[in-house]
Length: 415
Ligand code: DSN
Image (cartoon, rainbow, N blue to C red; front, side, top):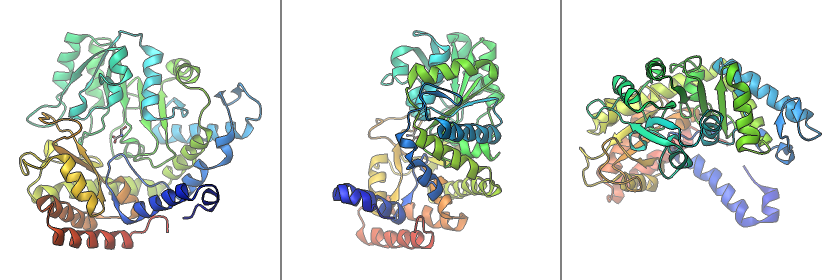
């Protein structure tokens, strides 16, 4: 992949873009929120729709010349409805966080109460963290996972809701390896007359393929990002029942955004169309199967998995029992040296800090896109274990780097 027109303008930027293609080709992307989109999605995202302003919605725009923008957005909405079975879909949010912002603006007033999962237990900044606008605008209390099981204790969530009486309960997580019982959260919300926002940012693709239970039709609002497991153009999405359609649309535009990023909406439409093909279900099933094997193999190598395993696309490893002197940051750095890219992550009961956490999070969506199967994941788990066990051993690291290079060669990406 070459960037000849960029090179003519600025060789440094062209170098960085081409180096990034090489980096993605030659390393294992195991950040659980990342994926590799198809060339079709890339093409749509880099299309001339980047030039177009299209404030409003299909058929009701504030600018002329929107016929093609309308056609693209209508398709994105149609495909999204088919993928997730939602009554109403807004495909304009610029990101998952923007999608959440749209929901909060639509139904909450400043000072209203949010009950959500703590960030260090797997939640997300936009669910009420003090450093985020949500923590500064609303009154927030947070639930935690059960310290023994690493899983959400739904009775505890309900008890917390009865005591706190939130206006909205947020479910859906960024570092939670287990299936979510949306109905149980809904029951907690019903018990206190609260709304329920399910943020499926990480698992949009798994839900669309039916390999994870769906909150659509259960929660009042379902938000997501569109570039993670669903592998479409970058951005966010909001789904809801028809009764909230107008409030949600107004909250996205003009409430929190101006012109939609129509090139990204085109990328969403193309990725959604790809996800409607039968092969996508196989992809999602393989993503989960790969994560399961990754978790089992890491456990066999002595690592402690939060909740003991995984039902979805990610594993969360608490390094403290097996490697008390190794932080998530240390592990992230040593693994990047050999071409395995993942992130240090906080774990439930975190004793360090978000910047220097005690765990690592590893996901399989991107590797599965490249064609990795269970056998490959056994090799990857072995590589991870060897490097974390011997972070200073240059022979081990050289050997692992060679294995990583072989895996990448055998599973090319954009070549
Ligand atoms: N940055 C994403 C993640 O890694 O989970 C969430 O926004």
